[in-house]
Image (cartoon, rainbow over all chains, first blue to last red; front, side, top):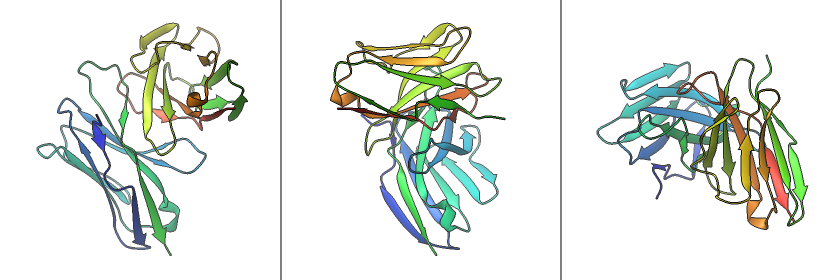
Length: 114
Length: 113
């Protein structure tokens, strides 16, 4: 039973446009959410995070939005660049009954075309 | 300022052999996490350790897998009597404190023949 779902396996966007990656979760005890970017044959690289007390966090070209009532978060990248092409993982954690383990989605492969 | 180090990057084993994966956390980080990624899947949590202690091993298979993080030296993930299904990428992450951002190493890709 997947607690973190990324329903789009892939996304293709034109350079300069906005990329929107979506993530849904089922466990209402999650209180901290992260996005990681992963290139082939490398480890995930931390991008941006958001805690459940906020609904938006921005860092340069990256913005994460959290809608707790819908149990949904999204990552916006604007403007998209070819170097953003990678697999993006959404991850969640909660303090209730856990000790810091992250629950990952299956990832969305973003392709930014020049 | 070195990041999380993992070695080896690639490891090939025959069925029945042992695999040892090493992870050195970032400087100043005392919390280590191991994750496994199967092909076309997301990362799955295995175990969380602090120095000399296993804090959460709820994601570890009950048999053949063990992990340690000694007082000195890297964290070790050990897989005994490997089987083909153990073939995966194994990632280590570290954080300075519980609940803080986890930073990942480059992973060890294990192939069991």
